[in-house]
Length: 415
Image (cartoon, rainbow, N blue to C red; front, top):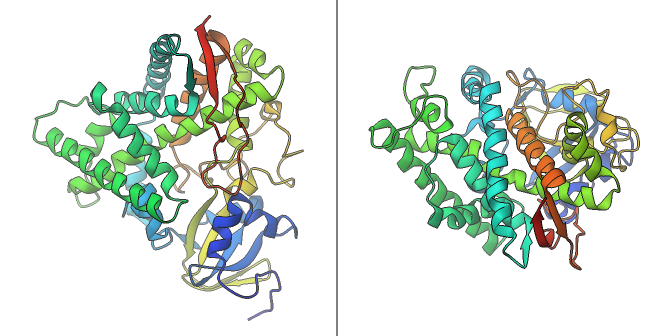
């Protein structure tokens, strides 16, 4: 075994990753201009990967797998157990095609229109309020949007309760103690809710439209021709709805960008092209997913480092989106960088990288962009508001991150 000096010495760094948050891998990899760095996490030897080359290795299906990689505390809060994020090989590709089938141009256009309609309704309510907290409003707005788009029935009286549970799932994975336990309970409640709906669709008690997520999850058959277990179908339905609600963080950060960077709001309002550039830059610039895990399938050497079979590997998602080897002036918010962007597989990876069909790149990128474009365009073209004194700072030590006061708006008016 060759000697590789770039590694942490001493104890397990699991608490360190909770303390340093988004910068844990970045300060190790980028400080030394490396694509791989060894540390110790959850009691085992782990490799941190960064840069385009590191991302390309991470999404190499001959060398990496997802089975057994995701820590149990994340599966029990954020993703759900045995979902698509943990699958490999032919079963994964078959399941992935199910998710991709939901992202047709017609379905994405419908999502854009649903989002605009809910902004219209929400803004009418906000006009009657003294002030609103944008992040909190986005949780409930996107709960309504995602359920309508997915074909999930949602009564007005249960919107807040369901949105609160989704917020706990989204925020709980980076927490320990009571908040983590609350997050696990929220997932259990949400899985049971969706499981009951899946069974209702199958039994004909709930009418569902073909092409919607609830219909396709309920009727999907695996490679053996069998329906998914009802709980498994519920978990995968959550893997459509939950990430849609999580876009509330990107929207809040986008609102922050339109305030912090002069001229952005006017550019977003005036150009469809710039609207797209802005949405992509929000996804690149602001913190969202910190890391993604995998395990090695076999022993191999790469850039002088010897990977062992079954070794834990983490790709530095946030770090890659701020890597100076990939992005010119990465700490500058500059949507124009996407004017001539070629759509690389391993550079912009806020929701994962690689190929959509063969790799674990999230097809939810497409739905995320539609929601962001609809939201930012509406805010820029149709909404006036004032910002009271508040704390708009956010910490990279907290995962997931968010402006501290959630972006408070007062005197909201429709233009």
